[in-house]
Amino acid sequence: EAGVAQSPRYKIIEKRQSVAFWCNPISGHATLYWYQQILGQGPKLLIQFQNNGVVDDSQLPKDRFSAERLKGVDSTLKIQPAKLEDSAVYLCASSLGAPYTGELFFGEGSRLTVL
Amino acid sequence: AQSVTQPDIHITVSEGASLELRCNYSYGATPYLFWYVQSPGQGLQLLLKYFSGDTLVQGIKGFEAEFKRSQSSFNLRKPSVHWSDAAEYFCAVGNTNAGKSTFGDGTTLTVKP
View 1: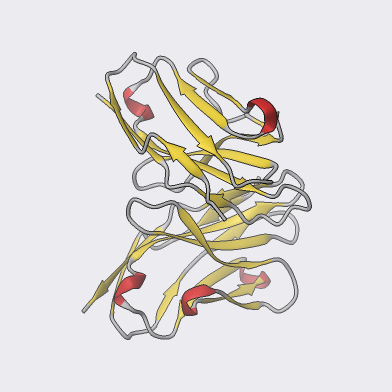
View 2: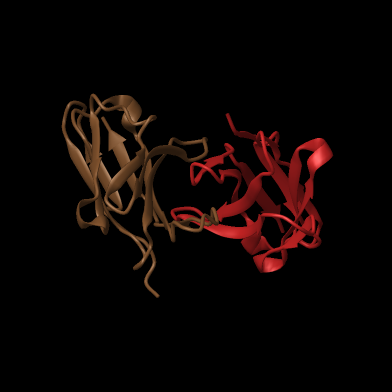
């Protein structure tokens, strides 16, 4: 069974530029999460999708971050314009959804460096 | 609001020695609790989980954890550490209503030869 796929693995941009990250979850997983992991910290939830609907985006900085999950499968997270403090690893995770088990399957992450 | 505290930022143990990583949680109801491991450059991998029942749970790679409701703790243990266990370990609590997990800030494990 294929795991969660993410790309790109690494990205370096200048501040005020834009960047997009892509995630393809495990087949059949209804719930998809984007987490931000800043160096030295644990993952922090940015947005949670159930199929193609947003369940929770309360921690997503909506003035610069956007995410979509068209057709309820793969997802894209975009940052525009980027700030220095956005330097982090962006982790995508998926789960079956219902019933809730809490078990998340993570991709390897996309490391963003903003200069 | 749910939260997780991992009091130890960094722990160093000798290979073959026992290990205990601490985790304290805050959650209003019976929690779902998890331990994940993250090797450098990798995503997080689930080690073990507690939902209900036996408070001592076994996981992969020889790890176990014990849920203590009275102490709001879910400490991770391993009797004999291997060099390959060097990684970062995250404790997490799951919100069953919202279907999401909150992670601690992790403990970095270094294994001395």
